[in-house]
Every structure is written in structure tokens, then in C-alpha cells.
Length: 204
Image (tube, rainbow, N blue to C red):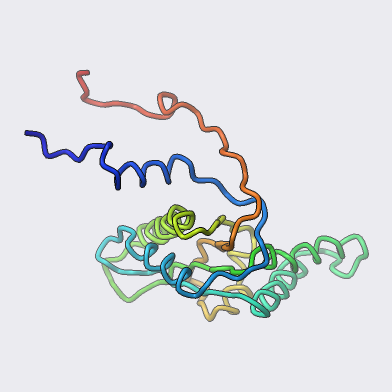
């Protein structure tokens, strides 16, 4: 008798459905999720696979005025890159940058930090942290939440890293925007897997 789990199993079907139907919210309500809900997201995140169990991920949960403080750092980051930062034509771009963390009631910055494990490879730790973020996105709907993933230039900026107490060698993998979705985005199309998959050694 085969011991392979069947996709008809209720739990397996629920997971598959969550992955295949994952969508990003287009808008959030102003209501702040409970801390227990955010903790459940993070508990799901840390079950991601990680070579050597290095656990390089770090989570910074921002709400209320902390989001405004992050927005100011975002604006400073952009301003430092502009040739004429005080020019009137740049004011709108700086304001958009400042407002980014206010798009959701909770923002979770997720970083991969360099640890002391001599066997740990930075690329593996980065991939593990990205997998942790994907866990959060997948679990969010089961908690009644929506979540979307953003990075952008700010993720690699030294000012932004310093805001979180991170070092230059650490990597910000995601800014995860979390809240109760008011409007869900559409399920975006993907190419058929036959276009992106190569089967080797299969006789079927």
C-alpha cells in the first residue's frame, strides 16, 4: 500500500488551495490586527527550512507612529540619492516615499542577519529568510489577514538598516504589509508550468 499522502486529505487540500489562490490585498482597513495574530504569522515564518538550523531571520514589527518614523527614513534614503533633493519637482516623490509604511496598519521588516556559524552560506540564509516571508503570506488569509511583500531601494539602504539596528552586511529581505483586507487584488496569471519545467529521467 502506498504511503504517499493523498491530495484529497482535508489539511493537504487546504494548504494547496491557500498556495494556488494566494493574492495580495489592494487596500487595507485602518483596524490594527491583534498582536496574537502577528505572532502566529511569525511562528509560521520560522518553520521555514534552514540549512544548519542557523535561523538568520529577524522580524521588526511596526505599527502606529513607528511606521511614520520609518517613512521619514525612507524619505531620507531617497533624498540622499537625488541630484537636487530640494527641487520642487522632487517633493511629490519624497512624500510618496514617506507615506509607504502607512499603506497598512502593520509593517513587518524581515531581515537575514549574518551569524557566527562558519558553515552558513549567505545565499542559503537569504533563501531561508525569503521562505519565511512566503510562509507569512500563505498563512495570513487563514488568520483573516492580508499581506503583501515589498522591497525596493530602501531595503538595501544603510540608513534603513541602521534604523533597525542592522549592520551593513545584513540584508533586509522584505517589508511585509499586514492588515485586514478591504479590497483583494486579482489572482494574477502565471505561465503554464510546462513552459518552465524540464523533466529528467521520467519514463511516463
